[in-house]
Image (tube, rainbow, N blue to C red; front, side, top):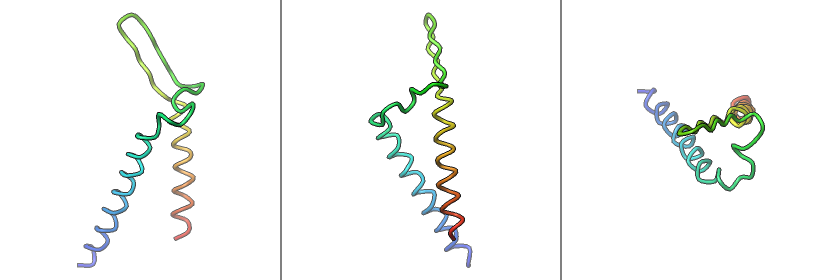
Amino acid sequence: MDSVPDFGKILIFFGFILILTGLFFLLAGKIPHIGKIPGDIEIHKKGLDIYFPLATCLIISLVLTVILNIIFRHK
């Protein structure tokens, strides 16, 4: 029965991550230049618009990696 508290901690952790993700999407439009930096791919053709924020995804991934490494190394 020791796994039940561990499962609760895991659920709280993922819930916290979901809340942070939701807040990011709510506030992303208010952050200047997010999704519009050099390296983001935009293709506009007749009847077709494709947008892939490659550079933005890489920067967000790098920032989250640093933050999570700091958090988990201090346990």
